[in-house]
Amino acid sequence: MFKLKCDDFLEYDESTGTYSMPAEQRVRDETERNRWKNIGLTLLKDWRLYLMLVPMLLVYLLWKYAPMYSLTAAFRYGSAVNPDERAWAGISAFQSIFVGFYSASFWMAFRNTFILAFYGLLFGFPMPIILALFFNEVKSNITRSILQVCVYLPKFISTVIVTSLALALFQGTAGGQPIGIVSRFLMMISHSETLMSRVNDGLLLTSEYFRALYVVTDIWEHAGYDSIVFFAAVIAVSPTSYEAAQIDGAGKMQQMRYVVLPSILSTVVIMLIMKIGGLLSVGYEKLYLLSPDSTYGNYNVAEVVSTWSNRLSTASTGAELNQAFGIAGEMTNNLIGMILVIGANTIARKVSDVSLY
Image (cartoon, rainbow, N blue to C red):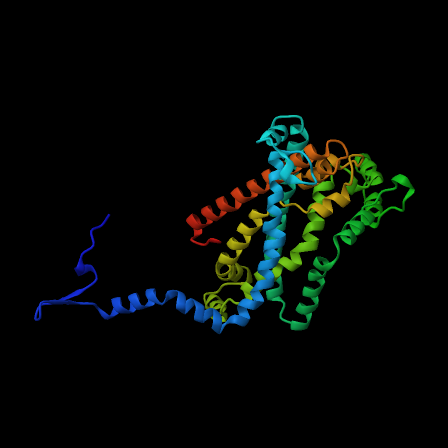
C-alpha cells in the first residue's frame, strides 16, 4: 500500500505556512459527493429515453435470462414437469455425450456443425463486403436501389419458403415427383453416371452435395442483408482519400485495396468477431426442414448439435434423461462458441488494436 501524505492532495503556501486544497481537487471532491445526485438528475431529465428502454430489458429478462434456469436440467434427472424435484446427477450427462452412449452421435453432429459453420464463414463472410464494394461503384442511384432491394429480399422470405424453393430447384425424379429446374439442366449438360444418380435422388438429399448447396443457399439468403453494414462503412470514406489516390495514379482496384479496405477494416474486424461468436449457431430451422429424419440420404452430414438435441429431447423413451443429454449438448456447443468469440476478440485486439470490447 502506498502511504498517502497531505502533499498529495493539498498545496503548501510557504508565505503563510498553511495548506490549502487546489481548485481541481475541490471540483473532484464535489463531483464525488454529488455523484448519485447527478445520476438521479440525469435519469429524471431523460426519463422518456429510459422508459423506452424498459420493454427491451423485459424482453431480455423474460426470454434470455429467465430460461437459463432450465439449464440446470443438464445436471439433474427426474420429473420434467417440476425441475425442483429432480435429483442432482452432476456431470454424468456430459460424460454420456462425450465418451458414453451418445458420444458417437454427438461428435458426428458437432463435426457437421463445425464444418457447415466454417464453410459458411469462409465463403459467406467475404460476400457482403464484395457486394458493398460493388454497390459503391454503381453511380446511378436508381439502379443501385433496385439491385439492393433484389439482394435484400431473400432475408425477408420465410425459412420454410427458402427450403421449399431449394428442394424444388434441386428435386430429383425419385418418388415420382417432377424434376427441378436445376436438376433438369444438370442432366442435360452432364454425362457423369455418378452425378446422374445423385440428380435422380435429389442433390440436396445426398451427402456429397448437401454442404455445398447449403452454403450457396445460405449466402443467397443472407449476403445482401449483411452488406448493409459494410456499405454504410464504405460510403463513409472521405472523397478526398479517393482524390488523393487518383492523383497518385491509383486505379479502381488499387483504390479499393489501399483506400476503401483499410478504411473499413475496423468494421470488418468487429463483424468477423461477431460472426465467429455465432460460428456454431448453425440455423436449426433450415437444417431440420432439409433433413427431418434419419431416412434422408443427407442425414449424416446435415445433423447438427441443435437438431440432435431437439430430436433427443423430444424422444418418447427416457424423456427426462434425453432432455438432460440434449441440454448438455447445446450447453457444450454454446460454451465453445463463447470461447471462440473471446479468443477472436483477444487476437484482434493484439494484432490490429481493434476489438469488440
